[in-house]
Image 1 (cartoon, rainbow, N blue to C red):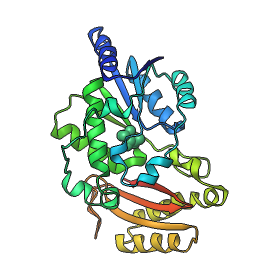
Image 2 (tube, protein in one colour):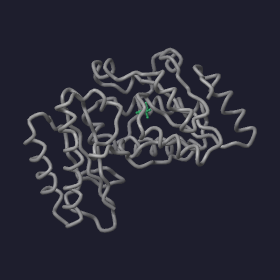
Image 3 (cartoon, helix red, strand yellow):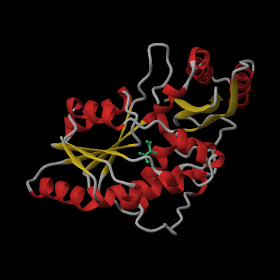
Image 4 (cartoon, rainbow, N blue to C red):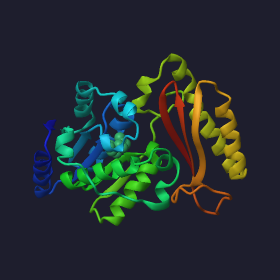
Length: 281
Ligand code: PAF
């Protein structure tokens, strides 16, 4: 596995592959890799000849300086996991390499970002769209792979690709969960034992809500029941629970026939912010 640290080296690597007729897959990450990331790499390797994973804790997408400071960084352990999963090159740029000068461009994704993560983390999706656009330009992948756990992020990136005519395909891979249902996340390693014991409740709440959606329980009742269960757990501080259209992400008053529903939540648990979602087709 090659280690690349500059945009020029990444560009040269992927252009050489392209000229040789090879397909290029990109797996953007912020490191502290877990099985969810490794499955993205494996999915990429199944469809592409070369797979670039990027590890870059992107400062522009953190609206909370403490969250940025505490974000786990384990570069050696990450590098050791990537090659066996099928990664052929690791891109680990510095902040100066990605942002040689402060960016002034501002993205506005309209209603897609006025809800959930966008509403609760001002500027977050501007930072995501900025860094993902840079990575797409630098790597020019045929396909880029993202996890379903960040459902709204994937919707934003799909919009970005469509609006800016990036010539690539976005592939979404399923959320990978621990045996007790907790969605894998780089932040999970920051949960202490009591918080870790409570954490599976998030997925349990989503599964109970999904069962209600399948039974046709109105969205407001589904949301109220989920809110009440989360509020009853003293270690949890819920941020939001939404019953939304899976594509537009707009909160639902009623279900529309034939349209998928996404149930999303965010909560603080022992000082760690966690998100999760379940889609009901
Ligand atoms: O999902 C993430 O890890 C990040 O938001 C991403 C897509 C790598 C951009 O920094």
